[in-house]
Structures are given as C-alpha cells and as structure tokens.
Length: 170
Image (cartoon, rainbow, N blue to C red; front, side, top):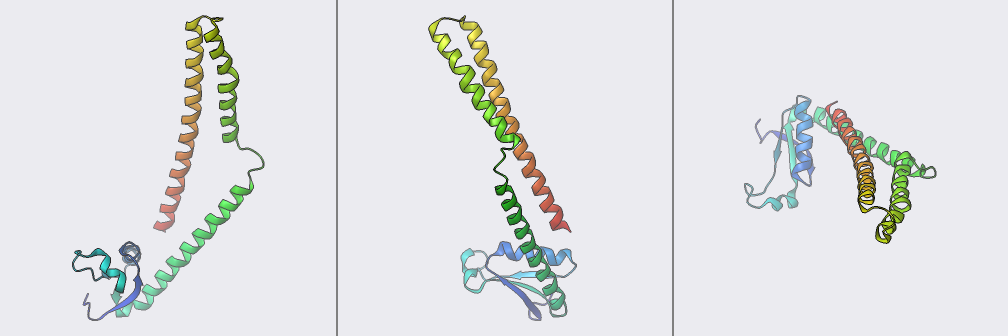
C-alpha cells in the first residue's frame, strides 16, 4: 500500500486498540496498516500527541468505516449484556445459592465439630491418635470443598472466555 494515498479510518489513543481494529479489517479482507510517531520505538509515549492512525486504501475507506462501526456497536452490545447479567445476578442474593450453602456447611463443620474435639484433645478425654485422625479428616474435607468451589469458579470463567472468543471470531 502506498502510504501517501492511504486514508485514515480512525485515530486511536493506544497501539493496542489500533491493532484490534487492524486485525478486524484484515480479517474482513481489507488491507490495513498502523502509522504512529514514536521515533522508531525509541519514545513509545510520543504517539500520545498525534495518536495511532489506522490506514486503509482510499477505495476501501467506506467499507472499513462500516466494519469498525459494526465492531464498536458489538462492543457496546456486549457491555450492555454484561451489565444486565450483573444486575440479574446481584438481584438474586435473597436465596443463598448452593455455593454459599457449601461454604456455610464448611464453617458449621469446622466450628461445631472440630472445636469440641480440640477441647477434648487438651482435656485428655479422647485418645490422641483418634483425635488427630478426626482433625485430619475434617481439614481434608474442608480443603476439598474449598478446592471444588475454586475449580467451579475457574471452569465458569473459562467458559465465559471461550464464549467471548467465539463471539469475536464471528
């Protein structure tokens, strides 16, 4: 592409945002390039003054604007959907979900069952080996519930990331 005949589609505040626009245009089959003034990378913050420009051929300018406008609209729509989802999730705190019940069970188990056993250990009312076994089982159960909850959260996060990536591929 001849940069003298190129048209500026957008000017971005950062190179990262310009790269996203460039990638989307290239995905749609439009040749796009980034032009920035940072003295060949010597002064990376120098482009703050003039911005990072996204260039296309003059004949592709209208198509590029349509694609980037559509991309911006999709971004706004995703943000609105995530806000609505957050509002619906925050409104559902009246009934405790199963995750909160599992945490409550853990706390009850830890403080109601283990505390008397600890006091019995120091009072020499129960054999010390039996007490250590009970404590070990309680701690392992508590750790298992915590790890299971953490894995569930990580799986949900991974699924959300996959959905976002598939939306971006479309």
